[in-house]
Length: 215
Image 1 (cartoon, rainbow, N blue to C red):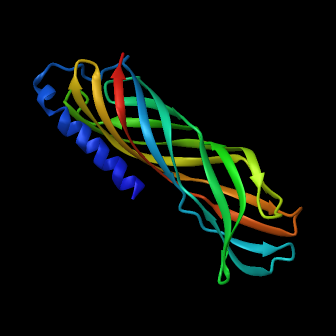
Image 2: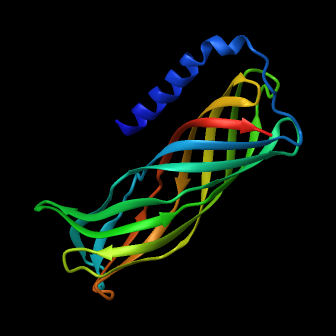
């Protein structure tokens, strides 16, 4: 629902900007910088079972909440078509153990998930310019608060990301941006000093809508 709302908001912004689309705009080009302010839904597609230190399956699975957060992207064009983007933001997630008997919250944690992608932009001189990208990401957990008597440690690490999006030029240096990233990342969770363990594939979708200024 949050993702659908973001996409709808982006499309609405493009529609509202419709009367301005007859105006001149600044195309993408070599040497161009883009600064994009987005609202992003960070939605983990987590999978991971919780096991004892001896490797016995407890019947519990890891569940991670999603989070809507502002993010900031910086893009530089090395050619008219090829660019590199870095995004910054931080999100907060609830980590729970889910089983047949119900769900119990075990940790609240913040994460900084910077992503850097190399992009190829189609139709860079056009008003509507889609793009695809691929790159790397890091996951840095901080500010964790254990819940319900659990003691949880999550490993930081690196993963990779795929990306697709579109820029819709509005007027002058301004455009509307819609963007989707799929991040692939796995972390090891150590619970209660190793009594329980889990390897969790977080693999979040990051779905965004925003506004871009070209420099």
